[in-house]
Image (tube, rainbow, N blue to C red; front, side):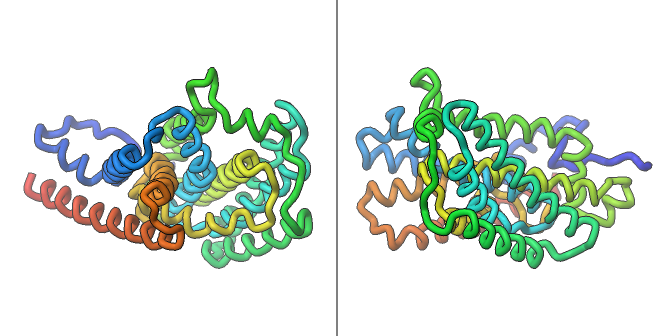
Length: 339
């Protein structure tokens, strides 16, 4: 088997950077743009709401953004391989009602609910990944079908909002550790740390290689089929965790709970700078994109803007972020050409 050549997205270049190369990396990094947007929104929010930076408000924002951030992290893995996973909405709904109906009380009950959610998400992801990778089915068509199937199964389990969510899930999973660190921040940090570890493995390198040029990846010895299969499985796991945290946040199971995520996940991915052409981006940017969308809602509410305009502002911010990212990327590439 040939040696897999790491892409520039997955490893640090062996040669030292030129002294003037730092700005090209900054301008070409979509994460930099989303951080800048977050800073601006935070300043506006702090100026319009007195307790904006209090522990309670920060915890509330992180709790509300976590399900979307987890779902966006999963969707990013598939997008990096140049695929699209529309099953996210169905999996989030399915795991939401499964946890609400079958989850138990106390810590062990929450652990049981998480295991159910992860198993369900991984199963759907494995089906998607196997059919896309080995049967060469179109990811959009297939995952749309699995989303519809998941939505149908969800209605068989729970046809109206309900379920029995334990107090441990409702309060402890959305609280702060030691009254200082939000549990949501710890969970997001663990997911990001896992991603950082995985992207340095052969599989992580293969994800970027497959998304950048699948034919070249095959010629380089990348096990493209296994790379795609694992990407979809891990995506399903993230969707399951998103449904689990959504259950803890809402304290109920709702058959259509995942519907808003169908569009918001891809909005968060785009805001985070991940290319839908595959091979460029990462989980961190997508999770920050989810946080940005949530914070934007808070800012609009605090400034007295009607909720009817939320979608409009979200779309405008996303378009602006994408345009700025493309503009900066061209500046970066132009600088490299003249270097």
